[in-house]
Length: 86
Image (tube, helix red, strand yellow):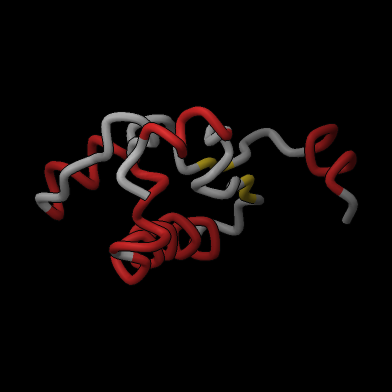
């Protein structure tokens, strides 16, 4: 099914949500970079980032829900990287 059809016909679409950074802080005791937040985890803790995303994917599979998940770097730009620890 195309993504257009998913949006048109699905009553529920699972996403990882905006609170993923908070979950990483509270559940895994990770510190976020001041400029790129949890996006730096693709370098420093990719295994934890994968584990958390996998949990969302497993829920989607269990309940047969389509899922929209974006890369953890979606909000990163040249200026934020230049100012970050990466």
